[in-house]
Amino acid sequence: MSYFRIQEDTSAGHTGSIDASHKWGLPGVLDCPACEATWGDNSRTYPSVDLTPVTSLANFESAWPKPIEEYERMCELVRPLLPPGALLEPGAAFGPLEGKAQGRFGPLFTDFSEILLIQREALDKLQTDGIQGLKGCPTALRFRQRNSPELLELELLPIGRLHPKCLPPNPQPPCPRCGRIMHPLPDVPILDASTLPEHLDLFRLEDYSNVNICTGRFVDACQRLGLDGVVFQPLEVAATQP
Image 1 (tube, rainbow, N blue to C red):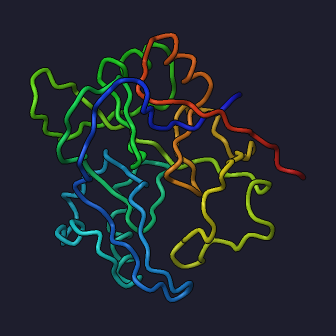
Image 2: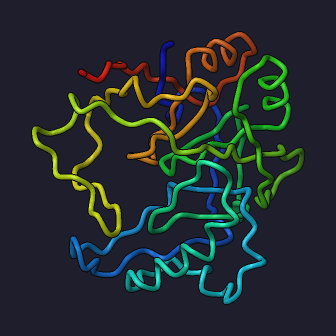
């Protein structure tokens, strides 16, 4: 099986852009007692998760960093509402994408934020074609134009990891308390074959949640159906040595 990274296509002639964020989110972590980092990353998104049953809901409306004890307490409030396979990290976001959208969108859309949007008709075509693991969630995007598209956010579960051969020698392990990865995404990512799913054609990496991955089946279907708006960067896949 071949795998590809999904990235923004700046040459397709589409002019679509969004200025939006998710309705709720976990805070970042302030001065982690284990690694001393203050950080948060909102690339781990679960738009299907409705936090309205949670008490103290106002606490989830700001991503401002908080002490790790508060972050961990809030994680436990959210955890029962997550879809199977979901993972949490500081800054994780939930609920519909809210904000402004404008311009001409392709069937698929992503930008620097790595949120992956899809038009309803394109989602229906891919599902009919047998692409596995597609979950389109409604957005709350406001358009100031006529004939605006129905954009859904694809909920991508975290699964799959990078192969050690593309990481620095003797890499420092993630922080045992907050989970922070200590080294940046490699310039040339290589996927670890033993960690890749057989039941999904679209997912995010577990260790680098801002990397959207698809299978060759997904790429072939998009090309056959004429679905543009993103580009597909082929990735090397390596087996783990016994």
